[in-house]
Image: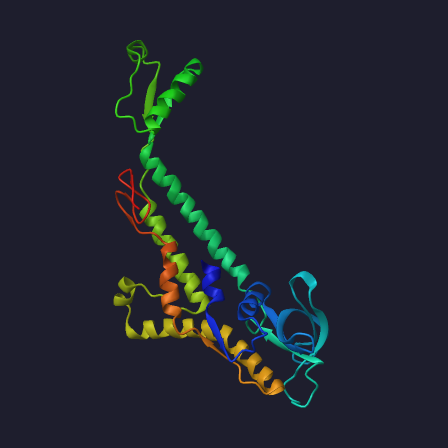
Length: 291
C-alpha cells in the first residue's frame, strides 16, 4: 500500500509515447535514480541508471550506464549538463534523481512497513489472548485429554463434558492467564507510524483530534515541514524534465497528482479501528466476523 502511494504521487504531462511513467517512478523508488535519453532504435526512452565515469566538481557523475530490466537495452552515455543545447542528443542522457542525494524511497518504506507488521502481530496475539485466557494443567499422561479439551474450547463448544473423578482429585486444573487488552493502544501506535510515513513522503496527515488542539503556529510549522519533504522529491524531477526539454525541444512537465488526497484516503484502511471489547472493521468483534 505504501509503495502504491509513492509510485502514484507524481504525474507527467506531454511525455513522449515511447516513454513509460510507471517504469520511471519505479526506478526512482527502488534505485534512487534513472535516465532519460533518445535512441534511433526506440526513440525517447527512460531507463535504469548506474553512475559511471568521473565525478565533476559538484560531486555529480559525468557518465551513466543506462540499462533496462532483462538487458534489452544497454549503453553508456555522457550526462547532459544543461548548458549547451546544441549537443548531439544521441550521445547524452538526462540524470533523474529521486531526491538530491539519489537515495531510494524503498529502503525507508521497508522500515515503516516492518514496524506496522510488528505492531499488527502484537494486536493479533493480544486479540487471540482475549479468546483463550486459560492454561490447562495436568499430568503427562493426560496430554491427549488436555488437547481434546482445548480443541472443544477453541471450537466454541457451549458444553464441555469431563470426568468427575478427575475433577474431584484435582489432577486437572485450568489457570487463567488474564492477558490485558492492549490492542487499542497498539493500534494508536500503528496510526502514528502511518502518519509518520505520510509526513516522510510529504502528505499532510494531522489527525482531526490533534489538529483541534494545535495552535495556528504549530500547524503552519508542521505543514511547512511536510511541504519541504514533498518538494525534496518534486524539485529534482522538475530539474530533470527542464534539462530534457532544453535538449529535445519538448514540453514535458511533472507535478503532484491532483487527486493525491483521495489516493491516500483509499489506502488508509491499512490502519483498522479498535474498541475496548474487540476488533472491528472487517475483523472480529465479540467472536463474530464483520464482513
